Image 1 (tube, helix red, strand yellow):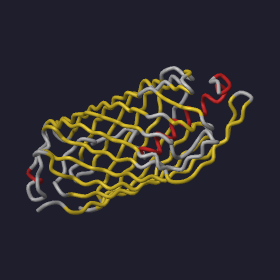
Image 2 (image 1 turned 180 degrees about the vertical axis):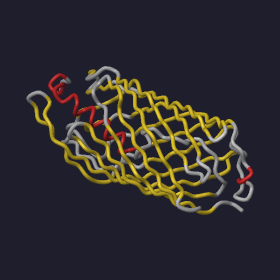
Image 3 (image 1 turned 90 degrees about the vertical axis):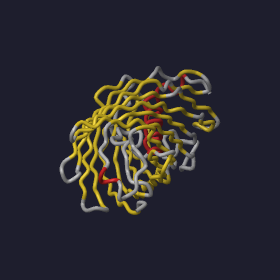
Image 4 (image 1 turned 45 degrees about the horizontal axis):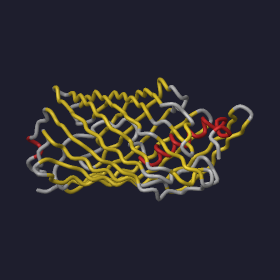
Length: 297
C-alpha cells in the first residue's frame, strides 16, 4: 500500500491515534495533577470513573477501574497502578469526498504504571503520616500498555491500539503554604502496529510532553488545580512513508477533588485543546469515585 491514497483519511488516522492513546491510558495521557505525591505505606486506592472525549462529530467514552498500592522503595514512597479500561467510539463525518465512520466498543488496552519518589516523600506509616509536611518532592515513573484491547485490522478506528506504548517520566512538586506547584515531563514511545488496515505497518515517532499544575488545598483536604500540558513530536508513518509532520498541541484543564469522608472522595476533571498544529484537538470531561483502605499502622 502506498501512503498517498490514505491522505484523505489523515484526520481519521489522527483520531485513531488519539483515541487509541486515550483508551490505553484511561485519562493518564490527560493532564494529571498530583502524579508525584506522598501517601502512607500500605495504603490502597481503587478508583472507578467515566470520561468522554469529543473531537468534531467523533466521541470516545471510556469507563475505567484502577487499583493503586503504595509501598516502600529504599525509604521513599512508591506506587504501583493497574488500569483496566472499557471504551466505546462513535461518530460519522466526511474528509473531502471520502466518508469516515467510527463504531467500536470493547475492552481497551490495560496500563501498568510504577512511580517512585526519589526525594522528599519518605516512607511513613499510617500513624506517622499526619505529622508529615511536604516541601520539595522529586519523582520518576514508568508506564506501559498491554495490547489486549479489542482490535479489528479492517477498520481504522478501534478501542485497542494493537501496539504497546512505554512512557518514562520525571517530575517535581513544591509546597508553598496551601499551594502545590508541579512540573513534569515524559516521553511516549510506541511499538509498531503491523496489522493496520490489513497487513500494513503503522509506526510513530515518540511524543514528548511537559505538564504544569497549580494546586490549592482547602482546609477540609479538598483541592482544585489549574493544569496545562504541551505535546510535540509523534510523526506518523505507514510502511515507512511519512503520512504527517510532527504534532504540536497545547491543552488547558482543571481538576476538583472533594472528600466525602476518610475513605471516599469524588473527582471532577475537564480539559480542552487550545492549539493544535494537526487539527487533532479534543475536549474531555470526566468524573470518578475513589475508595481508599489499608495502610501500615
